[in-house]
Image 1 (tube, rainbow, N blue to C red):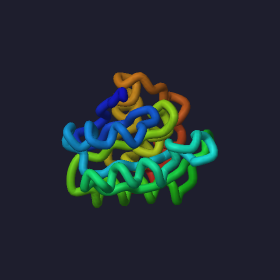
Image 2 (cartoon, helix red, strand yellow):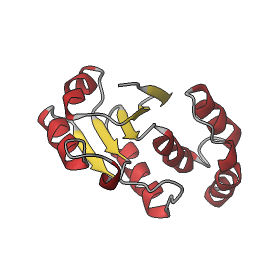
Image 3 (cartoon, helix red, strand yellow):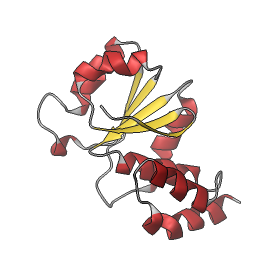
Image 4 (cartoon, rainbow, N blue to C red):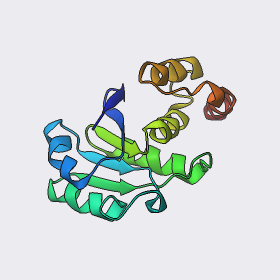
Length: 143
């Protein structure tokens, strides 16, 4: 499990397994968000499998599947609601952590400037430079 912190209280990771839930709890996370559609993963790693393990550890679990390259306003709103309501550190995962970084950045647009969001993601190993026009548009819409 490779966890990359993007902000205080928000981190991303590639796919986690049910066996990772105890470690996620030990690391202080209180909410886990799954951004990976079940069609991408084998049995045993589907959202409900991870949900059961996460909830057994006393953490909240949110399924917000994001199709690669098809980020919707509903995905961004759901991610934002889960982050804002988390009550503590949130871990979001997908195949690589990239989609979880993108929905976070889209949610944060207008709260942080696009350059900061892009640079933050880059430090974690994610290239969101192509997202600049979307981040700028969302930032203008929030002002």
